[in-house]
Amino acid sequence: MYRDNSLMPKEAVRLAVLGTLAQAGSMRYADLAGALRHFTSRIVGPSLDLMGTSLELLRYDGSIEALDGTGMEDNAVLAVTDAGRREFETLMRANVRAPSSDDLNKLVITLKLRFLHLLDRADQQEQIDLLASLYETELARLQDLRRHHDGDPGHLTEWLDHDIAQVEARLRWFQDLYDRT
Figure 1 (cartoon, rainbow, N blue to C red):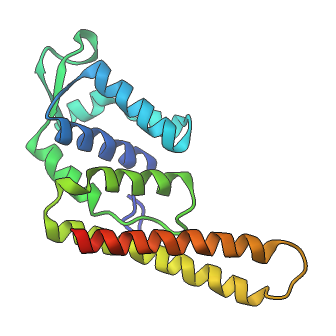
Figure 2: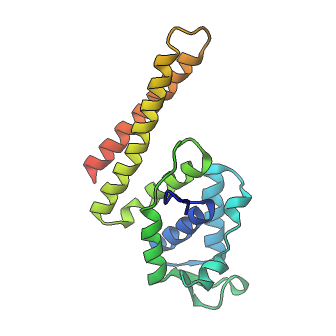
Figure 3: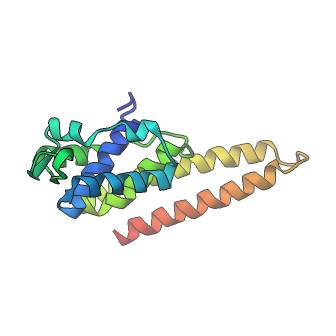
């Protein structure tokens, strides 16, 4: 994790692996690898940073275990261990870096939302608050920029209005999600 306790690319992939297994219970090695590749590439596109984390490394460090067989060579059924579950919960509680527009943050936010239901209610609401606060900060930043360039020629203020509307919609969505949780 970065100094601010936010996730780095390899930790985002660890979160994806551990969350996928926690949700599914168990999966064959090849199915898990394919599911991770599909999910991450649909969010951020092909990325060597994200594909570098080996399922074997997670097996070696005790975060996941083979229930039958040994791993990749025999397409073993994999499951998350108790240590992996603890790591999953730690990763779910990690910060998201600002600004929220980069691909890694988009992946982390998407993973948190994908696996949010696996946390208890208090932790879910804490994560929703954390994510909403990112958008509150983003909204304040964009509104300040918009005020500063009000009346300028060109299309910047139109673009900023568009971005502001998107951030306001996301913030309302998170507020609604908090109320439903």
